[in-house]
Image (cartoon, rainbow, N blue to C red; front, top):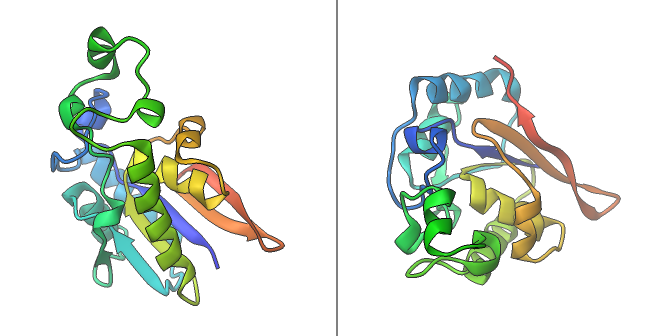
Length: 189
């Protein structure tokens, strides 16, 4: 069983580095192009389960990849709730809170790393409960926490896994031990 974890294509805010949690932004033209490239990258692979964040940037990515029809919306795949930092760039946050790191500090009036880790654990449990491959369409920070939890690291370890927009990751196992097969893989195109 493999989990294909796909970060949505580019949005205006991901392009300029703004924290995008609960703001429901559309994909840019380039984001739509990257999402469409998933069709070729995923081929005709049968998925036992396709889960998608409720946000349009993830749902449209799944649709353009050809997997939207059978996708189950899962609120646990929502991006980190950035609270007071929603829409701000890291530089703007650091001007208010020097040294801040979302994976360590969380967000005022938003989520803590432990809360995001608990959501990731629930997604992993659902993925592991099916017989066959699973596709997840979600966001950068939640997927970074998810990969950390997949390999039994704390949610804070998500800081060590950089992830671009429109990328494909494959989580699998090595002789029964959870492992990363592909991380931050380009889709081509």
